[in-house]
Length: 131
Image 1 (cartoon, one colour):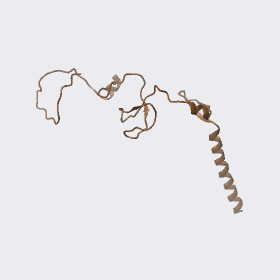
Image 2: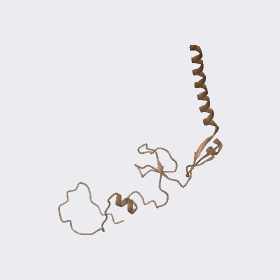
Image 3: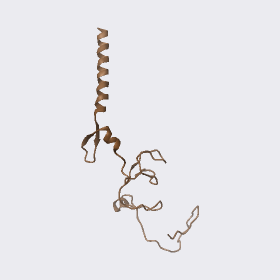
């Protein structure tokens, strides 16, 4: 009786493993933007190449802009697709939509050249950048 139970368990486990292996190897499912799955052969998947126009960046280190997905060289987080469109403004500039600026509570005022009306205690150097 005990031998029959052991044999039954071994056969069930073997069938589960074989089903999993053959089920995963028969077809790969590729999900497109519409959310529907389409089956593709392994040859089709191997021939797909990354889109050259897609730039990958890190949400914590936006200075890293790479051509391929992977890990951030600065913090090892997963890279995300950078928003398409727009112009690269360089490292010292930031462009936000009006909604993002309102959410961040950013207020701007025109630059004025005038004397400081109260004492300001600072550490460091102050230099004029007229670019």
